[in-house]
Amino acid sequence: MSQAKNKNHLIFALTACFLIFALSCSSTKKAVKFNKKGIQANSSIAVVIDSKSNLKNVVLVKFLAKGFNVKAFNATDMYQMSDIYDIKDLKKLSYSSTADEASSLLSMQKSYSNLYKLHFYNYEISKAELLTEIKGKWGVDYLVVLDLKDWEEVSWGRVIDLRTYDIVWLENYPNQYGDNIETIMDHFIESMIGK
Amino acid sequence: MKRIVILTIFSICIVGLMAPIAHARPTMAFGYLANNSNDDNFDYLETIFPNSFANSLKNIFDINAIKPHSLNEELKKYKQELKKYYQAYELPELVEKIDSDLFIYGNFTPLPNNRIKIVLHLYAEDSNRIFTFTNVGKMETEIFRLVDRITMILLNFMDQDNLYITKIIAPRARLAFFTNLEGDELNQFYFPFMQASYGVSSFQGNELFNKLTVDDMQVFSNVATRENSYDIITDMRKVRFLHGTWSGNYHDERTSELRETFTDNDLNYLKSKEAILETINRTYNGSIDYLIIAGFDKSRSKAWVRCIDLKEKDLVWMQTDIKGGSIKEIGENMIKRMNTKIEDPFKEQIEKNK
Image (cartoon, rainbow over all chains, first blue to last red; front, side, top):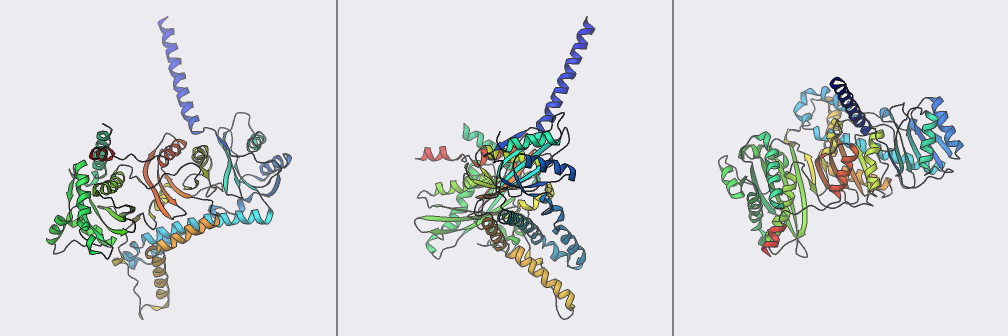
């Protein structure tokens, strides 16, 4: 009798530990969703996504099927941080090539740091200019940024209104068991049009 | 009671801030507050102000306050005297000589309509950073009110989270964020701000990835703006761009490039910074009110923040150690801070003196 009681306690303790662990994991994968205004299904959109081509086709078809006017797709090619020349390389080069002026160069730390900061601000400006161009030239209303993940991970998306540059929709969606790219896309599209 | 609690916390924090220096009582040295006007009638305030700040802080903390007169006497041992103005690069040497943990000095300018502009510089030993802030306000008839106003700013900055905030940033303000977060983490951070009715610009959020690391972000923790700044000190005396007939074309060209880099990004950085802030403002059609730079640690359990008013091009909020159980909670704590007026620890004292 007492042995059975101990066993029950052990099972209860293990279950409690598992639940605490599961809750702590899920807290980092908590869903968030905000929709400032529903995006009309006939809007002109540009989509930024980083996936294999066959998966991109699924995403494209899903938007087209809902009536979206997809003006540009996979705009990731237009700007990527990894493609931008990293000014940190310049910093290393300068230090090693003028070792005879070590004291001067150490005092130039602030110059390099500031240059680095300006480089990043300029990068943000370049992206905004590009978005203005996308809006003006192709009449794109919204930029849709999507990242579709595997099961147990969090898929996320953002929609930017190119008239105001404001984020008007965002969602973190922890993928459910049985989800696939189609169900996730259906969920995201319904969510962004405000249904 | 509340005041006692606040003061006790401040005392603990200031000791914490000075802990690496391992002094039992932190030493704070006060230089002159130079009279920037041409009116000699205000000269008496050059020592009155720092003496009052010293007394005010000493009344609250167990600190060793060195006032300008004593500081001048101390410097005489080194055949020097206390100057009214210092170049930032002179401070590390000075602070080492006077064996102080913190050196505070500045200047003031009387303004029309009975207003006064006070600029204070704070340098903590071995920090290699200088914090400068400007306060424009009423030239109070009772000087203690003005002293308390400034002392409150000093107290907040010396607190554990180095708080400096000049205004409330209320919901409906339009914010642009610059962080080391990406993807779903960035969404978690944006979420509470959008929920609280702040406008969130797509700035940096318009792409899939973010290459900035925790270390990269440290560079952005130094902020130089027109009136308020928290910036690295450069020792200009050590910067040499030697060239001559002996050096040859290649060396001369390189030296000239380096000199240009130094001029644009150190000596004239404020100009470059203001120009780029104006370009951001223009590019985004004036849709951003505040640029919030937030650096998250690796575990995403705390963050520091620097906030620049993009219209005024000024640092309006600075804080370290904003903690939270999640990125979303850190965002919520930021909203609480930026949307709440700072409690005045001197309020009770002022009420009593009425």
